[in-house]
Length: 134
Image 1: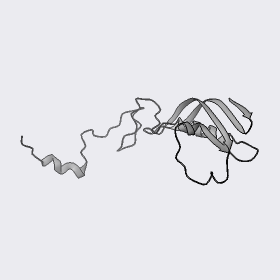
Image 2: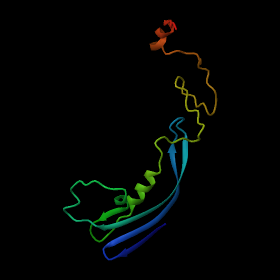
Image 3: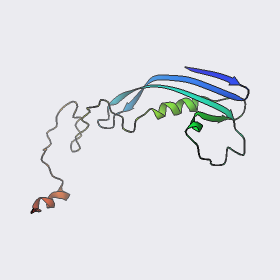
Image 4: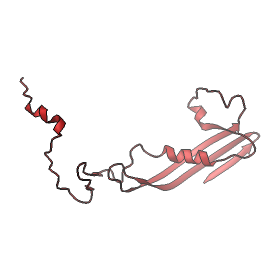
């Protein structure tokens, strides 16, 4: 839902988004259902041509303000931004997802693989000969 109000030249947006995003699990590559529930608030003011091209440093309060040009305010990018901000860096189907076997590719959530667990990376095998004295 989104409530839009205009007062003089300012446009005020108050909204809430509740949805479920279908994504791919970072560990097992199965479909992960990511529930999204977020409220947002924006104040949009008319953009001035000379300000829109120069770079300025924004404070935390400035992040609630945006700019619009012309007579029509497009809310789609603002809503999209709010959804994208809710997506974690690493999406998991479940917190305890075991992922895929790095050798054979078996989904370890479904079945165990037959790969040897004591396998040593050949590049590091020379370290087995290293003798440490205390």
